[in-house]
Amino acid sequence: MRYINKTAFINYLSCPTLGWMTRRSMLPKLTGPGNELLRLEDRNIHNISWHLFSNTVNAGKLGTGNAVTKELLLDSGIKTISGATFVAGGYLAKVDILQKLDDNLWHLFKVKSGSRYKAKYTYDMSFSAMVLAKSGLGISKTTLLYLSNNYRLGMEISQLFKEFDCTEKVEPKVPEFLALSDEVFENIESENMPEPYLKRHCKNCQVFDGCMNKDVKNHIFDLPRLSALAIEELIAMGADTIDKIPADFKLTQVQQIVKNCVLTNTNYVSENLKTELENIKQPFYYLDFESMMTIMPLYRDIAPHTQLLTQFSIDITDAAGNILDHYEYIADQIRDCRREIAERLIKCLGEEGSIVTYANFERVAISNLAGLFPDLCEKLNKIAGRIVDLELIVKKNYYDINFRGRSSIKKVLPVLVPGMNYADLKIGDGGDAAASFAFMAMRLCDDEKIEETKKNLLKYCAQDTLAMVKIHQFLKAVVS
Image (cartoon, rainbow, N blue to C red):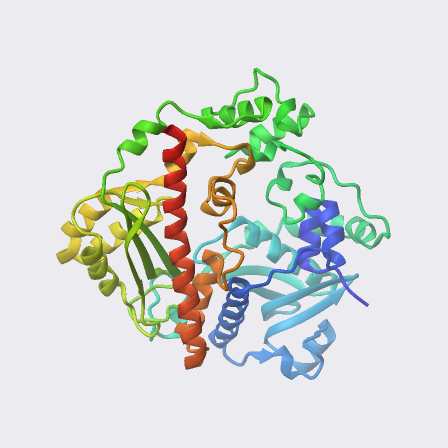
């Protein structure tokens, strides 16, 4: 028998259709190096957390397939158990840590690899507490264990975690969930899928394109940065596509541009585009960084979730877009190479000419390097001052209806430069690039794999700088 888990239940609360699909494993599978790294690190954090408690019994060693009941806990005299699975009333909950207090009252611990409390954690813990209540176990206290920014590699494990008492947040939710549980169970187990309807949660739903956006052209979600309030108002008036938005509905300047392009089936070119492009001074440097961020620090003196630069690519071109020189760098995966990256950047980027990036990440990263290395601060700040954000220029001055409200390089490039994309690359997005480097840094790759991965990472980063060259040339052609 299959049971309703936390994800299906919580998804149902935001969208019955999504909960029904979750129960039947109909959602897209999260694959690729980025998701693999998240799962690996999450398991690692949970395993580490179990060592915080003395005499903890791992449910996996009970010979019951991690399944635990109230009777088993009482008969065995277990005081603290980790990794236990409870089943009751058609629901299944995996509990990180459960510690007995007195009589039949227990302390529920939820382990998260983040570095702060998030509201969604309350739902996680409330679901677990609901299933435990159905199992006959009373939860009198709930605590979130999350990661401390003060932890550094080599410290005691006790310094890795911080505690946040969530009892007052969880306590009122449990009876709410219990009251809903029978209705949710009946509807999720029904053979008939609940009829979907448009809501603001649809905006970031992983099945949106095959659900409410199926066969829909110019959905309101194609408007950039549409607020939750605006979404609710538009849905209430039956405006699910951009052409249905009333003329007097308040939109931002950028949103109005998108709407006008959709209504007139034309592209937008601002009067300021030529001036903004003329402000980009030769020689043209095109710079792209890649970075990694692991939950557990891999090098000394680095906090959890620290973003570390791992490589860069630089193209230098003439006015016609011909590449005059190319520089690239990739870090040694077994050490922190930020100092070396800073010095190489100073050497490669010279002292004159604009440095073109796509988005603001490179400017922020260079400013962070300047703060990290005071002796390089002046030179690095001068480099940061020469940066021109090409994405910002696109956002303000050019729109193609095929952007669908997006401005990222992955969305813009295939529209402006047909035939140029990332489909043929072994590593094709930033998340997978970060994870691939992390696997090397964790020493999970042999020498042959490391060599292959580094080649693929360099190709990916070089594609980003070449993409900027091509986009810049396209925009210049538009105004000329």
